[in-house]
Every structure is written in C-alpha cells, then in structure tokens.
Length: 337
Length: 284
Image (tube, rainbow over all chains, first blue to last red):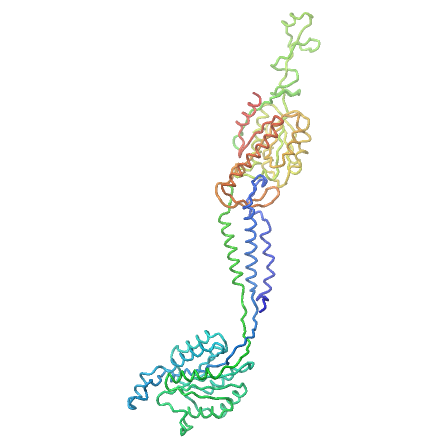
C-alpha cells in the first residue's frame, strides 16, 4: 500500500499563502499601550500569544487544504483466496412468492395436497434467500455477485468479497412482491456478461435459483452456449419445485414443458452443468451444501480500493482551531475602560 | 478646557536677572529686601538716602539703603510628544500635558515671567518650539499646538537637542514626559540643566498604573515600537503589574533624589492645586 496523496482541486493550494495573514501584526487586532517594557514579563501570556496566532494560521491552512480535497488515490490490491467466483442469479418473479411443499407432503392425501401446498409450506423466495444467506456466510473465501431477474435482469451487487454487502443485497430481495414475467434467457446472458472483462482467476459459477424454466429461442441458446464457453462458467440450477411443477428427472417428460426444455438444453451444454431439484426446504439445503463442496479452488483477484478523502479531517482540524480562536476572542480585553 | 487650573509658583532659590518679577533675585534694585548701606557716591540714588544711618556713620559719608530686587525669570516647558504620550484611557497623556501648559501660561503671565516651550520625540520638534515671551494668551496657543500634534515617532533622541538652547541658563524648566524611556537620558538631560530649577512632571495614565479588573487576554501593541504582545490578565499578573509600576516610580525618584529634585505626578489629569502645593513645599 502506498501513501501518496492527491488533490481533487489542486489549484486551491494557490490560496495557501493566505495562512501567513495572521503573522501580519495589524494595528486593529491589538490594544495600544504606551510601553510594553513597563509591563511584567508574562511567560504564559507569551505562549498564549503564540498559540492564538498558530491557531489562526492552522485554521486558514486546514480550510484551504480541505477545499483542495486531499485524498489517498484509488488503488488496486491483489488478493488471493480459495474458492470460486459465484454469481447468484435469483428469480424474483411472482411464482417465487408461492409456497414450497410441506415436509410431510408424501403422506398427504392427494385430494387435499394442492390445498395444503398453497397454504402450509414456506415461501420459496424466503427459503431460497435464507439458504443463500447461509451459503454466503459459510463461504468467506468466495467472491459473490448477486443478480435478480424477472422481466429483466438487475445486477444488485457486483463481484466482491465483502459478504455484508451481498447479505444486504439478499435481504433486499425480500422487499415487495415479484413481477409476473420471467425471462431466463436475458438473465443468463446478463449473468454471463458480468464475467466479461474480468481476468480469469479461478473457477466461475452461475448459481441459478429459479422455480421455472422458459423456452429459449435458438439464437439465445447459441449465445448462452458461446458465452458460457468463452468465460468458462459452470452452471448450477437450484430448481425449486412446487406442486404441479414438472419433475426434471422424469425420463418421459416432453420438451414442450419449459422447465424440461431448459434442463435438457443445459445438459447438452459443453460446460459443466448440474441441476439440483429441491422439493422441500431440506432438499434445497442439501443442494446448496453440495455446491459448496464442489467448488474450492485457489483464486487470485484484484480488489479496487476506492479513493479515500482526507478533507473531513482537515475540516475537523480547522473547526478545532476556530474554536480555540473563538475562546480566545471571548476572553479578549477590548478596551481599557 | 473650560477652567484653567491656575497655580502659584515661586522659585525656591535666588536668580539673577535685571527684569523685575516675583522671584527672589540676586540683583540690587527696587525691592523690600534690605541688603546693606552704600555710599551715595557708589550708588547715586538719593531717594533711598538713610539719614539716621548717615549720622551714625563715623566716616561722614552719605549712606544709601540698597535693596534686592525681585526678579522675573524665564519659564520653559519641555514636552515629550513621542507616541507613548498619545496613549490614555480616558484622556491621552498629551492632552494632560496640554492642560498643564495652558495653566502654566496663565500662571506665568500673572507672575510676569516669560514662557517658552520646546517639544521632542525622536528629533527636536521645531514646529512646536516657542521662544520665551511675555504674552497673555501664549499658553493657550501652545496647548492648542500640543493637542493637535500627531506623533508616532519612537524614542527620546530629541531630548538633548531640545535642551541644548536651555543649557546653562537659569530659570524654571518643566520637563513633561511619561519617562517611558531609558533613565540614562534623564541623567544626561539633568546634567545639561544644572543651572536651572527643573521640575519633572511625570504624566501617567491610570490605565497604565492600574491593571484592568477583568480576567482575560489582552493583545497589546507598543505605541512606539509597534511590537505586539499577549498578556494573560490574572491576579498574579496584576500583582506583578503593580509591583512593576512601584519599582519604576522608585527608580525615577531615586535618580532625581540624587540631584535634590522631587517629581510632580499628574495621573490622568493636571491638578493646579497640587502644583501650588508642590511649590509651597519646595519654598517652605
């Protein structure tokens, strides 16, 4: 780390000679006296006299410095850690506000199961957010990015190792209700794009958390495939299955079902792909744990340290000096009578 | 000033001089003070012929009474107009000095003495020089000149120059100053004036003598040198201040006492009564 200092407005430093003003002994500042030799020597008084001039100079100096805006320039620091670059791509559509299957759904009567599933199970997005939060908290070495999508993707947190920001982003995902549209293709392309322009420093994962699929057109498929290949990204799909959702593992399922179609397309990709089908909250937890086990490689990356502004300290010094001056002025003798 | 603080003064010693006045003189002439008898041939003044003494005189000469004549003198005021004299809490010291000169003008005219004035700061102030003259209103003119004079000159170098044309002359000299200068100069000045009767009028302002009552800080500027200094006014400093004033007073008085001179103090204003008392005490 270097300690160089730059100024936001260097031309303001031209005002620095103003700090010499208090050294000019102006007549107006002082009370005239016939002969100073007449007065007793007063060492504390002399010190105070020097101090108030010094305070005045300091006040001007610090103010000018603060106006010039000193700061430590923006730097990049190379950090290395273990783990992966994981982009959490989370479905924010309205279907995610629905509930998951209750834990005892296998024992329920199929007649009432639909009713039960709508009313009893935990909300899908809530469970997903809790698990993701835990996942992020456990994997301190990884770098995370967070992207929500429904009708359009929205990058909430760019890649960072500061977990609290990611956690805050995950928490923010719970505000309000989701939208009705779900555009998985655009979301995947945006997620792939987030890895563009980044030096490859370790394994890369897109963790797609969604409860539904979509039929992608050929061109989108082409671009997704090329993007995943170009950026060398592994794709993990946490499929939150609720009642009436298709089973991804069913061999006889038709590709007309969007989820199945998406799954099949992912399976045909040359890049690593793994789907975790979660029916219940426990399944989801297992799936998350498995992703955690899979990706543990060393990772080098550059972290950007933003410019640090010192002007507030300068202003604090100036304020302190002004306070000293005010105290001195308050106790200053104004006239002889 | 509305009423002039007129005062009475009398030289406590004899002076020479042929001009009649009101001070004890050393020359013979018309006066109340009998000296001796002289022969009419030596002093041809038949008005003062002393018949009784002539009859008693075994020599048979006519004897004439001789008397000492009271003399008029030259009074001179030497005023310090350096920058420190312009200081003052309510009235500046130069104004106090002007009040004194005005009172002196009236008093000197009453006694029939000629009055002159010279002033000094770093140089002799020739613009404030008045040769000795007998003139009723000269005191007011001098006072007006003093009140309107501006000086920010520093030092006392003009003192000796101002005294040069008074050196070796008899008379009464008032040396009006605040004596905020090295007292070596005072000694030299008094040496020059050894023939005259010198009255040092020490003009001090109450603000100089008594420190301000309030605690706090005072940023002070020397009137002469322009140097600035900060004082922390507190009881200890007030004590030291008063001690410094007392020490300075003792220093001046001891120097003057060595020449048998007593100073006259004017603190913030000129008091004619006090000046009269000063001379009564001196002549008693």
